[in-house]
Length: 303
Image 1 (cartoon, rainbow, N blue to C red):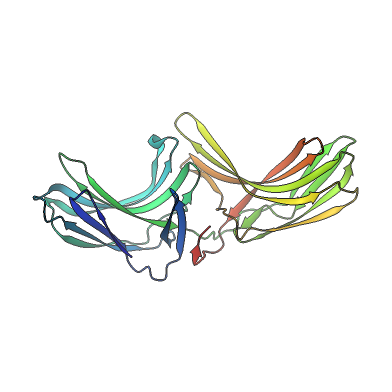
Image 2: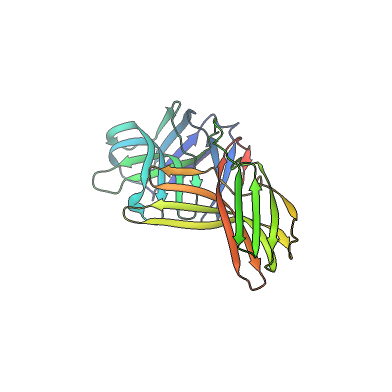
């Protein structure tokens, strides 16, 4: 997939990733537009071709060097000064001279990309190959080709049973149990809710998966909360001794693996949350963190 981009009439720059015919595709939505990205994994080799075409109508364009950079970067719309390169490697394509039509092949063998790509509310982890034409007395000319990184978890995260209780003395005693706390992205969450005492008139019971996106800038920590899904467990008053099975599928949810303290600045954490709503619309809740990990890479991922 070769793409040429005009740089204000100065030149056109084409960046093509090669040997990608069998690569999975990740479809992302950014600025209300869809974009298809090839999927790579850590230690994959990134091969490609760069082609620069000088605009014939212009006078000769002098530059002080052309470089190619492969980069994985943590970016935040909250504080651009806090953006940080997670991994990077630079190759020099040309020394100082006059811009002319040129083509280069490139390769970044077995490149280490330990963090997955991420597209969040205010924060992202992006990977790209960028060409920069450096100039002395003018703005540098840049063009990039983005790709996606997905990594399989070779070790299943530690999982422990979940048991949480919601209680008000002499009025309410409910617990919900789940046999594990770690799930792969296509897993099924199974559990059970048990009623021991329910003198309060409950109207609804819901279970939700809540995502928290946490970014630490220089002097402040920003947290965004997003409800990924909500499941209605009960509509109406429960009966003492009643036990309700819970079963819901993760496959079609827009969830990611759990991210923990990336560059000591960024985390994505998920919580299983139980909501109870009584007839006065008063809400009771309990929550427990759950861990998501990647077990497989889909051929086409549009989530």
